[in-house]
Length: 466
View 1 (cartoon, rainbow, N blue to C red):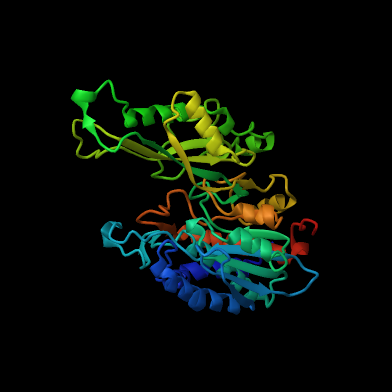
View 2 (cartoon, helix red, strand yellow):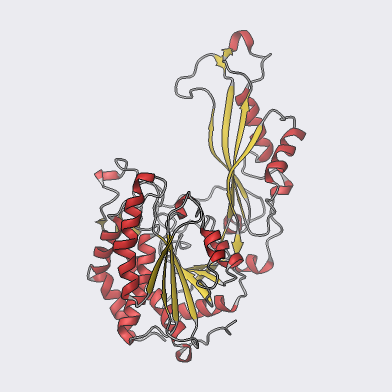
């Protein structure tokens, strides 16, 4: 069981304003990975924030160039206490999405952390600076409290997660020995809701598709030519409806996942989604019939239309447009075969009378999942429930995406995510925020897991080391 003094110190660190002050400094670095002009800010964040934080944990620190020219550098901190104790791999990402300056409510600056009650607004506050600060702080408090962690630590930071983690897989494959560990515990993504401590074990994958119906260079008068010229917008609407109908149900059998495994269905049986104040209510009749909302979100595939356009929607004229385009995304769970997705979609559209629709795959990222019955999952859930007054939700994966597969499929690690955010945090949008109450509880939960990892004899035994 975690010492009461360590719990008290964790709570006081947030209550005193010290955590807010640290996060304020971190948010002040505009580390937008999609903007080349921000590469200096990314480098400064590594050198001026993360290197000192890792050095304070007694880590030796190394920075590595990215093998992919699209991505930024990697930072690895390593602390070795003994070959006889477990090794923990932690992960975080230093980069953020576009700050959307000028679009935040009440004139907020995305690079200035501002508090409004329990909400702490700033770009990166929830994704991912606030989350990796929780883990860095928990490790530091543990080290200060007892003089040792009781385990070996490797902390990996990347700088391109928000642009698809270019180079991360290749880096991990080339540095397997340096990143070798018994388990990965990291923090990103949201909890089930604002009040439920959560572990999730994977992420859905995604494939982004562009459908392009480019029929002619000019637009023609709809009165003179309507009825004899194919309308690309109408064609595109029909093509999309053949892939996913107007009720969100996938119409292509090859894009559906296998049946939901019984352990996943059982774990999701008691899960309620959209449980936080202000969350939109799930729409009745939307998505795959016969599934609960939790099963549709965490255990099934979906095709979403991300953008759709033809001509000028705000200033239409009486003309048949020459071209129409849409961007779709297939979100899919582990076990779905997406190796031939372009061929599958192209063949399906042709069979339904739409051979004129060009299909382009723009990007993809794989799905992966740590098994629900992995011993590390049981250990983490039981450990966290010793310190929280309510059940810990265990999700087979989140609905969104993370580079989870790098750790499970390349490094071969059981991978556990302890998120310190919630679905309504507005990450990637103006007004992104971290809840102070989640930061406070998250710091206690992280300290609890890390303490238990270093003190297996004091509580729940650790899984056998590989």
